[in-house]
Structure formats: C-alpha cells, structure tokens
Amino acid sequence: MKKMKYILLIAMLSAGFCFTAKAQEKGIYASQKAVKVKKHYKIGKDRASHLVISGYNKKNKKIWSHKAKAKEEYQVYLATYKKRKNKVYLFDGKNLKIYRLSNGKKLKQFKIPIAAGHNIAFDSKDNLYLSGYFNDDVYKIDAKGKIIWKSSAKEFGLADAYGLKYKKGVVTQYYEVSPRLFQVLCKHKKLI
Image 1 (cartoon, one colour):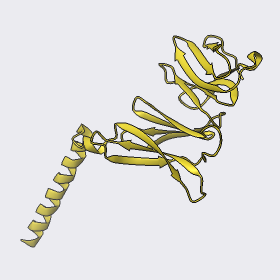
Image 2 (cartoon, one colour):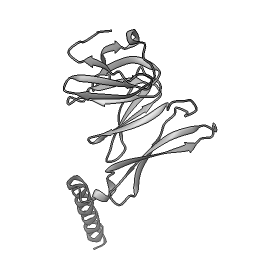
Image 3 (cartoon, rainbow, N blue to C red):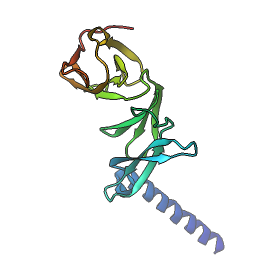
C-alpha cells in the first residue's frame, strides 16, 4: 500500500510538472515575461554611476535587470540601450550585449568600434548602423557582429554627432555644430 501511495504521488507530481511546462510554452504565465525596458543609474562600489536596464511585465513588476560595466563619468554616455522587436541591445563601452526582452537572457555579445555616445539605427534585415558622439565614422554591422563597411565624415569637418537614422537605403547622421546632414548611401560600400 505504501508503494502505491509513492507511485501515485510521483505520478501526480510529474503530471503537474508537465502541465506547468506546457503552460509556460503556451504563455499562460505571461505575467513572468517582460514587455518593456526602463533605465536608471546606480552608484557602484567604485563610486561611479552605471547604467542599469530592467525588463518589466504589463503590471510593472520587474522581471530582470542588467548593469553596464562602463562608468558614466564623461561628457557623453558610455552606455546606452535600444529595444528592438523582442530584443534589448545594451551598448556598454566597446561591448554590445544582446538580451531577450521577455526573460533578460543574454543571446550574444561582441566587440564594437565605438566606445561612447552611441548613435544607433537598424535596417529591415537587423543590420546595425553605429556611430558615436566623438567619432566621425559610421559602421554597418551585421547581426553576427561582423563589420560590413565603414564610412567617414572627416572630409566635411563635422563633429559631435548626436543622432543616426536609416530610411530606404540611406543612413543620415545628425551633428550639433552644423545644420548640414551627412548621408551615407548604403549602396556605396566602403570596405575596411
């Protein structure tokens, strides 16, 4: 009789586990999935300010959190983030970390050539266009982290880029010191 109770108990526990696993697959536990990202800054043990990004569910409950290693102690931010589709891109100094929005799991990490003041744009194929505040270069980086091409605005004598936009094959970089816009045609691939 005792053996029968244990067998029945094990069978019930396994059935419950199977139900829970299937329920998670079907999204019954949607309250445990992040749908938005918020940022704040935290003073670390090194007495420097660090960017912290957190994923929140629909009821505004924190699901996950990640802290950037780069210190925020200069004129421009060394770390920033961008939410795109179901991913969160954390630009942490010269590292790009890509997380799944729903659970904060790190999907990829690779080195990038821009260390601060990241300006970011994407095309429909998830290629990343990247420049920086103190950097005249614009990089096209594929989804695997490989630099496809690089172009520069040095010949225009521009500096202090503050924005980047991609639309219909044209990358537009915005500058603070000049009303002119620097545009890189994506068809013009300057290989490095």
